[in-house]
Amino acid sequence: MKIPNEIYPIETFFIKPGFSYYQNLKFVIKQGDLVNKEISYREKTQYNGVFSLISSISEKTVFCNADLIDFGNQGEYEIERQKQNGNYDVEKPESNQIVMPIIFEHEQFTSVLEKQFIKWWEKDVKDKIISKYGQLKDANPICQFARQIRNSFGHSGINVTTNNCADPIWNGLNLKNRNGQNIHSLVSIADFVNFWIEFEQIEL
Image (cartoon, rainbow, N blue to C red):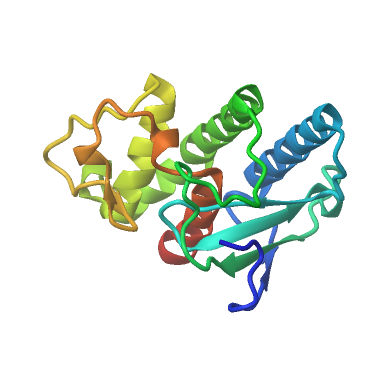
């Protein structure tokens, strides 16, 4: 899989201040930038400020540039997305790709994502979903997916115990069938960004 590819167009997507995840995504992009700078410094490689996030269960790569974000104002900022040409094989990466040990850096990145996702759900979304559906258990599968993602971050693993509501499903992944697993083994950071965008469009 070549990133980016010449098959599908790259889409510019503007993140507006009214979006529920507006501030949360700023922190995620900033952390991604810090991680890439750290890796670049350690590996003595060039980094131009633009980094890509590969999706696992959604279809679009996400391209970010922290230089486009100003934490001091509420102006819109942009990311870019492109439909992926095939799937990235984490078990057998292509021979022309460099594989680096970045477990510590990935943990840094995901810890920021988890904090921002929990804050997004608790502060900006949960009450809107309750207002829309009456009760959380009556919400649809994408809302249940968000709810169980939040819970998996809070409990260090997927633990779906509710049987009286819709299954937590998004893009074919049913979290009810994945109890005990680490969510990051199933859903990538790009997936979370794509999820935020889709959730905003469908539910909010």
